[in-house]
Length: 205
Image (tube, rainbow, N blue to C red; front, side, top):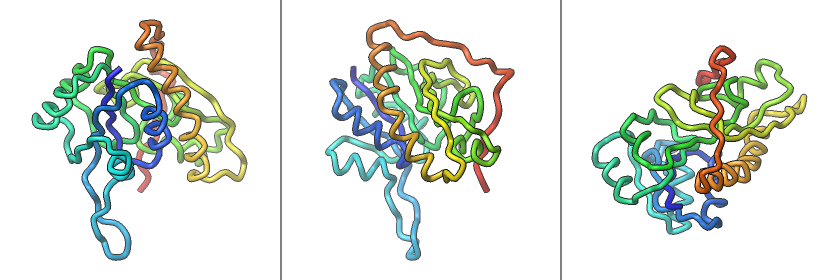
């Protein structure tokens, strides 16, 4: 399938490598613009932008993926499926409805628990013993879409958020590729979340 990827952070790079090596075509990466970083406060491109540049994949940087010019750029790629990982922007209805096979995201928790911007940190803060990865459809309400797949992992008693993030990133590609294959074949099962069980994982201050 022809794919478009929306993402910015380091967390999604393992999935990008897997998509690049798969039979699917990664047509475009949309990512956040460079941000000031380091002591010199010099603009630094996102991890996804750096990866795209190194791999020779077409990419565009924007602070609003819902702008008509960006929507036009994505539409021109004729994506069958759009994938979102650690993007950092709200996605509007026009983009949600653009691809015929839909739009899915990789979320670093066992949804419906820990919806939000910091799903890796809050299970550790709250003393959880397990977490995992969920593949879900993207809706206008954050992390509230249908579940296509999940994988669980134990949290070690001395594990940091950084260590856990690395492990979850490595668990993501097989689950994502499996979901994509099922979507392509028309065999994907879309399971509704129990919204009564939802908890939040707000951005850390």
